[in-house]
Length: 182
Image 1: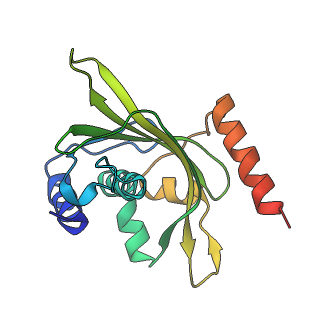
Image 2: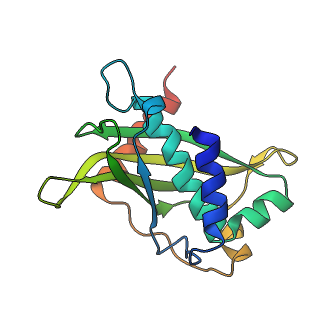
């Protein structure tokens, strides 16, 4: 099973899963670590975490119907920044969940949080990794990013962005500093 099979499964499963409100709901996807997910240390490769997070963002777009507007206009989702903190390894055949949610947004970008969560031996949740991603939808014809309000209006939403938490504010400040670095 490779990533394309996971994408196909995600798309088919989305027909049977409830719709999501991209502003308030959390996408939850279940996975298992397969041999092709491993690195030479025999735990999940750090690049695979990022790849699976793409599926969390895709799930939100599909289940909120944002994908219809994006596809109709031939827009492209683009990640501009990301920060990850690995806490515990994920080992071969270990089941885990990916939780994805939008935590705030501004004119043309959103910040999403991704959490990879497994269970300890006693069944309590363990956060294996947590990441923040800044992303937007790019309109190639207009050569600009699409305003978030326009995206939300396409699915009948009006909302004010939540105030960024301290860690999100620090992430955004670091992103601005890197963007402005010579």
